[in-house]
Image: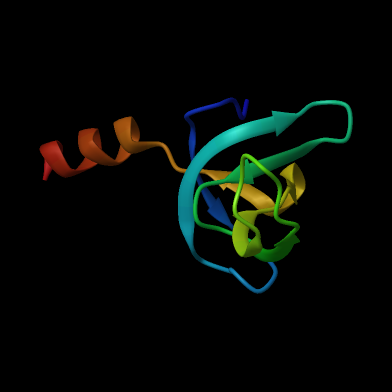
Length: 81
């Protein structure tokens, strides 16, 4: 099961074969945000508190396009060799 903090690998799309850590999950729509993956440009208007401009931020990916990377299993296999 994919949850926050899980290491995953992207299977399809522009970021195929990249891996990262899940930072947010949208369970209703079966989507997840992965750190540094599926970056989009967002135009932000200047306010009193924040400076405006173009910022890059992560966007959601569908969970079916992700595979869990299980570090525990790979380390056990390497230890046996």
